[in-house]
Image 1 (spheres, rainbow, N blue to C red):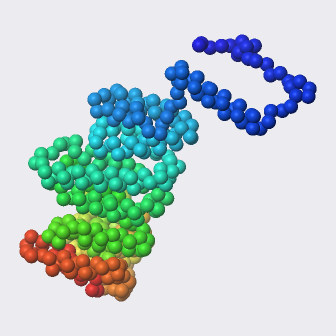
Image 2: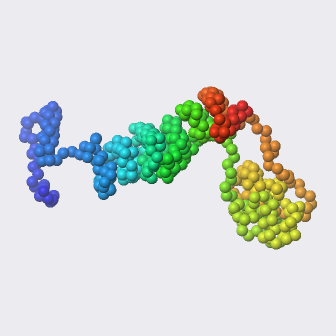
Image 3: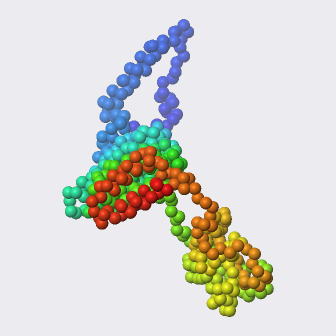
Length: 451
């Protein structure tokens, strides 16, 4: 047809003639009928010329092209074309609804679904669209598809002796997609209670794979564990719900399965009585006692020192020797009684581990954000010491612990039938040697429950 200048179009356009005097306005019903039948005429005319509106409801032609296993160019072109349609709110909404209906194709398509998943993740990455799709049930849909993929892996585990290196691609990408939606705080709070059972079951199922284990399944297993950590940290009520889910999950596995329940019971132990995590890298600031400035030569110029540096541990004695070496205090190098190290205005025994001093003295004083300040001085130079001497770092130095308060989460196992399940597992063990890990974990959990 070509382009028509605006002036020419104005001349060719019919002029709106004013109504002659006395002419009646068109009745509302007549106007409605006129619009109705003119629209039908327009649609019929367009169809006769081969033009029809684009229907996105079924995506009949788009689905096979976006997952075409034989042509990457076709997949790229289809995704670029769909992306170009998303130039308004309504179109983006329609496209996301359509693409969500394509998610079941990911499992069969495998690596051919890469372009589709990239497009879907980029369109749904904004928080409003995550919330919109979550309300439409996409989280549960993804969880069901993940369960289906894991079941397929276990069928292959039981029926074949070979594995494909690409096995688990769809499962990994679906797990990443689920993690993307759970990054939204509102969606995580609302749906984590419904999804935690599926995520836990999926993680345990992947741990059992042997033949079908690939790099992709290992990555998926790690990602599921990360999701599990994020979904199970919250209030005590949410933790209690997760403990009940753990007991329900254990009951799904046969009594002769000695391996799978170990992780669940270990998890319950860590919830009831969390063990202290090992301290990573931290820093120390080594300072001379200001009152002995004139008596001690040298100065520690490398502050702050990393705890991973040579000479910074494992014992406080090693720190003392590092100070003596760097400051050329050779006379005090072999003399454990000549120098004192103070942390939080307390004299530390040189036999104490540096990490324990950092955790139990420095961090408990509320100063854990900064480098641990260690003050060194010569003993007896300005008279007898008046500070407290810390020789051991045991529970006796802390306040009395209320067992009822410390192990209060064990009551959840009594309420949800966990004790009965644990005793059933113990009674079903025929050979202790084959179930050594399970027995030790169950006995430890029972000991925590009876405190």
